[in-house]
Image (cartoon, rainbow, N blue to C red; front, side, top):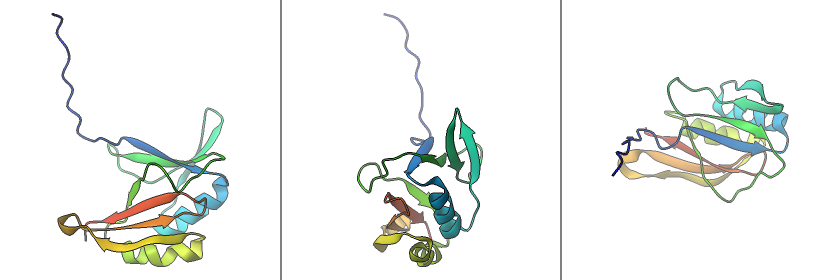
Length: 127
């Protein structure tokens, strides 16, 4: 019997992409609520905007796409120590709070928003 390689997964999520029908509007939305700039890139002809993240670590971006959706995979963005502030910024940036801040016990707090493109996105803070 041939040997098989064993691979230990340390981070289940390595990258995420949030679709945006209007990339500029979505960039403005996330810049406003996260109070941190996204980096605009062009990946093989597809306009994207990358969220700030540490290397190595989980990263993600907005990607030009005509099919945003509030249904399907839910990505949680880290808003450590500023969940209340982020939720306050959402309506003025063009989104809405779908699920207000809720305790998730020893894991901290979470909330769901609908972004400027109609995507449901989670927010998480340990404190």
